[in-house]
Amino acid sequence: MRLCVSILTLLCSVAVSAQVLLTGHINERLLQGRVKQVEEFMARFNGDEDWQGDRMTVSDSIMRTKYLRTLFDHRCFPMKKGVIENGMAEQFIREVTESDVRLDYTDKAWEAEVDCKCVKNDTAFSATLTMRTVKVGDCEYRWEVVGMSDARMDVFSGLRLSPVEHEAGFTALLSMRLPVRVRVVSSVRFVFHTVPNYTFTVERIEKRNSYNTGWLITSLIRNEE
Image (cartoon, rainbow, N blue to C red; front, side, top):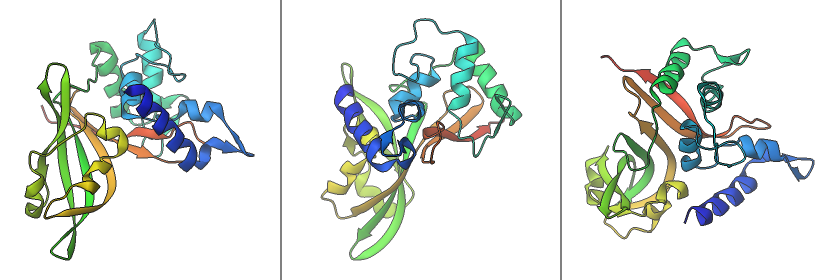
């Protein structure tokens, strides 16, 4: 399943991302740097996978720190001399590496926020659906709608989608035959509460001629203890 999704995402990335094209040829280093999937973001965050997609057999705090810095959107978290200038971000990285905090698809400490443009009774409106992964069988999971920003979207409550729908941008919502129609999925972001005392948001970021693209951390909040 992962292979099929990876191939589809890779092809889409090549098609829509101008930053991987230089004089008509694919710049492989830029493509490798790009975080093409949410699953890939998790693997790099955990220190399990390198830029080439190969499994890292030896993961130390120095290497993991390096990879974690690349997962921040450098427009929001500028780098200087190899270090993120935002002190809270560097402290976050230290706590992740020291405690070996890991992200897991099956973890309940993260959710997807899906912004939609919808229509009900010929009236257009915008709304956000909140979704989480739920276990539905032995080693079987689904995405489930657990919240919405607009009461008109309550027909989606409890709706379950494919476990890999996050890699397709939750476009399955467009085909749902319900009293409310989702016409456009305008954006998707993932909010993680996995690291104690922190909440961070991951969004897909596009840039030209940059290694720092794809699924990146765009927001980091330190929660009150």
